[in-house]
Length: 181
Length: 181
DNA sequence: AGGCTACTGAAACGTGTGTTTCAGTGAATC
DNA sequence: GATTCACTGAAACACACGTTTCAGTAGCCT
Image (cartoon, rainbow over all chains, first blue to last red; front, side, top):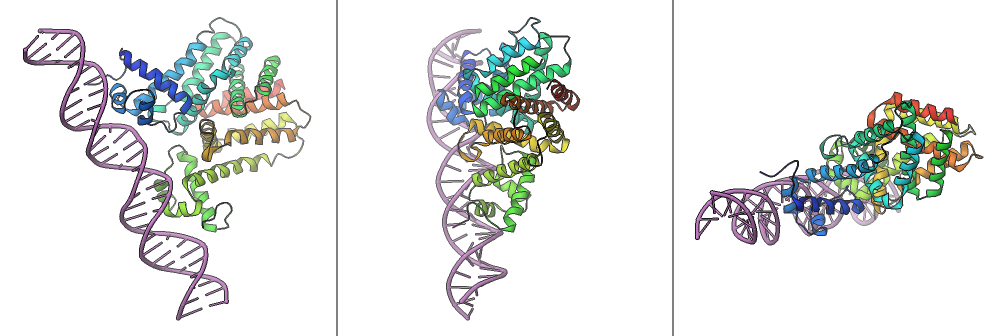
């Protein structure tokens, strides 16, 4: 019987990492096992063996992306306040090297809304919760509407940024919001 | 030679409308001609004849969705100011019956970022421009950062709303932002 | 009547998909 | 040395896809 959830196989995590890198600049939408396997030096047979199915692979890739996100969110532990948190979050998310991750994020977000079952299930809601929980920790006493607003500004701004590439305008909008707070 | 751009065929627009409705609640991601044709009382042969290719169909479906959006944006003509405009936009976009359109919108947005060529090309940037242009018309003198911020808040808020379904919290966030303006 | 054009149904084509089958490896265990 | 086990390559499987081919039908124009 193949392993399903946790596997200590070194090759497995190595392949997952390679697949993650591949997906970051090819997207998940028309991911196909044969091209993927060829690109990361493996075979469809092995991917299926290690991950059970294509859906299993996708699930783990999404979890991997979320882990990237959580790793950063977790680094903002102290009660630094909403404004400071927002500032650092924008700095992180607006960085050019984050572009592929954000693209992947939006793609997965949209897909999980259209197809609430299957491998994508719950991805959108999960990330909203992740971020809101993190903002709550940064300023526990804040009005929930305030937290929601900060999150909305950040997300709306990077939606704009990633489509237009206009870092100046979107950055100015975020800074304006921070001043208004 | 088949028609490529504009065709007055009544059957064609009728089918496009039916396909649009179908896509609104099935999504574009794994759209397939055979199931679509069966659902709207047509055949793959006819769809291909009328729209040239699947990509041609998708292009027109995206244009159709954008037309829905523009039809509303165009209705906000006067110099009503950013705040009033934002209020009405939120009212429109947060309405439950708009949910399928918004879902489709997010899906197309994400896809057009990953796959900048082909049928999805430019969709993301086009809608950002549409909304910003409309906000400019509502308050020509406003700071571009202000416009961008309003747009970000609206988009971020409905990203949240559509994932969590929490109309109260997201609505409160938008109202809070309007007060801050 | 005859040709022309717009349109459509049925079936096939070629290709790519996820997945399975089978037949092995090579190393560790008894 | 034999057996077992995790792992892998090659090939096939059944299927769905977008698209094409071919053979029409219906209506209009001269």
